[in-house]
Amino acid sequence: MTVLQETTRPITQEADFLKLKDLDHVEFWVGNAYQAAYFWQHAFGFRPVAYSGLETGNRSTCSFVLEQGKARFVVTSPYHPDSEVGAHHLVHGDGVKVIAFQVADVEQAFEATTSRGAQGLLQPTETRDEFGVLRHASIAAYGDTVHRFIDRGDYAGAFLPTYRPHQPLGEVKPVGLAHIDHMVGNVQLGKMNHWVNWYHQVMGFRQLKHFDDKDISTEYSALMSKVMENGTGRIKFPINEPAEGLRKSQIEEYLDFYHGPGVQHIAMSTGDILGTVAALRARGVGFLRVPDTYYDMLPDRVGKIDEDFNAIRELGILVDRDDEGYLLQIFTKPIQDRPTLFIEIIERHGARGFGKGNFKALFESLEAEQAKRGNL
Image (tube, rainbow, N blue to C red; front, side):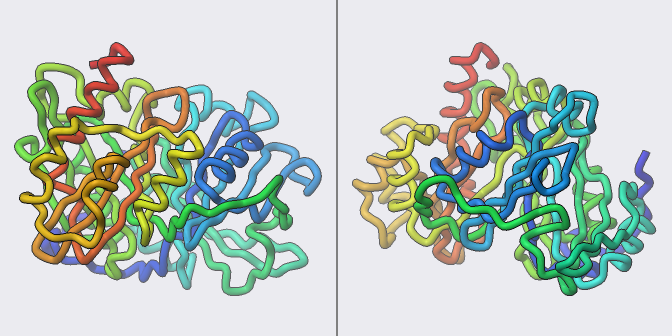
């Protein structure tokens, strides 16, 4: 069991001892990497840039690296069922396994986190090939999720050793996704504060926002959420847990079908949400839809915005405003068979929040989807 050190540092202040540069990549463990790569390319406009598999000397897994803007995804599947990847997929289905960070000093990052209570999974390691040396290490996070530290300063290869450059199959048409805005983790009832404290003490993050069951609730269900961010503010991890309600919340549904804690959704930033969502809809990406009555009161609630309200209504985009500006957001339906991981598209105009004014309408639409699945 993880033991966290006591600290007197307020949870709203960061230590930032890791000096994380940015997210390096997000790795999904899936049932079929070839088909997953095709999906991310042709549905979301990601460009495949690297490949690892039998042809590159990798006898255990097949992986594709895909990029759009500053976002980098890796999809990995196993060649054999008696492997770690195979076992993980059997339990969880398709989902996020690794959240990797760019650091200047892998040994320092590993020592700093493990000395503060993190469980080390991979000691600082140097992996070499003809393109140089790549340094990396890993620690355990919530559920079976892994945090990886990576230093690419002395590596010039396509991605990692055993990876080679890869040309996409067919034309790649990006949809305007720029970077990962935030990633949300779902944990069990009573575990939110544990993992909030873990990110604060082990990773040096600070608490940015707190939403309780009065903020995020409907007639039937509720959840609680706290948002953690690193020192630069580039990396934001909201942590959700279910709250008591009359019926099963979306968090409980996720935990039931993912069989444990994990990444619930990835929010992708765009500078033109109208164009991005229109392109995604044209490619068959399904989105949640709030009741049309939401849009009747929207102009009065959010005030003047640059976008056309009729276009927002037609595409089903949500809008919210805080003291620093406004944001536009929309959420896909689950992107795999199980009702687990989904994607958020977000465009910020100064706002640093997460759409608090949209919570009720959004969660009612989520419950409508749960009801269709017989899981409410």
